[in-house]
Image (cartoon, rainbow, N blue to C red; front, side, top):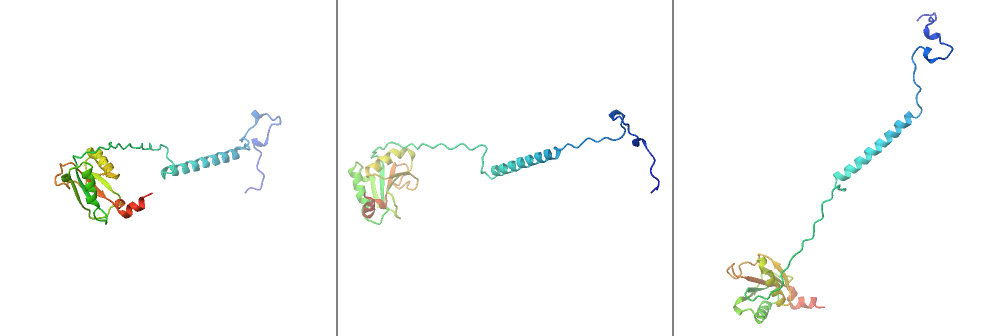
Length: 193
C-alpha cells in the first residue's frame, strides 16, 4: 500500500451551491421506512390464506365437507292391494310351533270361512316361527293374501318363493299360512293386553 495520500479526484470538489444537476457520482435513494413492515404483513396474510386453503382442502378430501351434496333419496311408496277374500286359492297351513293341533284347527276355520275342504291342507313345519305369516309367490296374489290374513284374525303378509309348488303344480294359485308362536296358548297369553 502506498504511504502517500491519494491524489484529489473530481469527487473531492463538490459545488457549494447544492445544485443537484451539478453533482457528480452515484446517488442512492433513501430506504423507505415501512417497506419491511409491508412485506411482513403480506407474508403473514399469504401464510394464513394457504393454511386456510389446506385445512378446507383436507376436509373436502376426507369427506367431512361436501361442496355438492348428493340429493336425498325420496321415500318409496309401497302400494298394497286391498284385501280380497278369494276362496279359489288353495291354502296350505303349516304349524311352526311346538303346540300340536293348530294347523288342523286353522284349516277348519278356513273351511268355515268358505274354502272347499279339498283346497285346504294342514301340516307341520320343520322349525319354529315367531309370527304367523301368509306367504304368496306372485305380486298379483297380494290382495288374496291380505284377505286370507284378515280371515284368520290377522297375520303378516309376505311375498316369497319359499313355499312355491307345495300344491304339486306351480300353476295352481296357492297361499301358505305358517302359524307362529304368537298363536300358541303361551304366545297368546303373553301378547294379550
